[in-house]
Image (cartoon, rainbow, N blue to C red; front, side):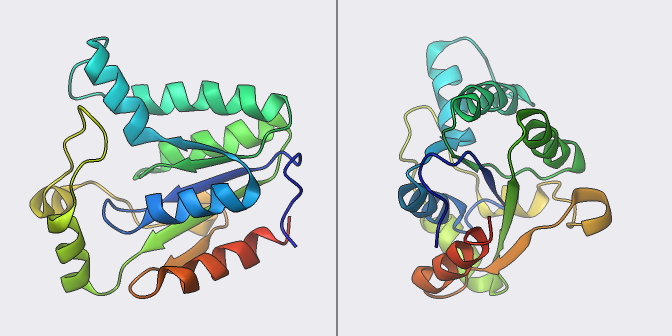
Length: 178
């Protein structure tokens, strides 16, 4: 059974661009009746508004933390969709959950089929004005530190090479333990 829609929880989807984070995060947010915070959407809005210029650095994450904290404060579950490539970004979500007094569930989405991952990245088109999706070369050059449970905390590792429904079932099973 999933948490009630009024049960505050912070669920964070992390992983490389093109791994299927957004698809899984959207579907999980719908199941939880949660706020869906997508870093790409925040960054695209900042760029469109002229408030920020590339490279954005951690500004999208800072905005997401504030919005998530406000939602959690009133008991709304939050699903975050963010690459979170380095330990500092991952620690930010853990700190937010701890200071908000809510459970944290992290889902790392990976693809083991490199050819399929490349195909997905190269086929992507931005669904957000102002957002330029990364090229395959940019995904490969992204600094993404491997997950370390000792350093980064527990997470569910989901391989998203095949059917999205199977990956979503794994995620929902993991979230049912809240």
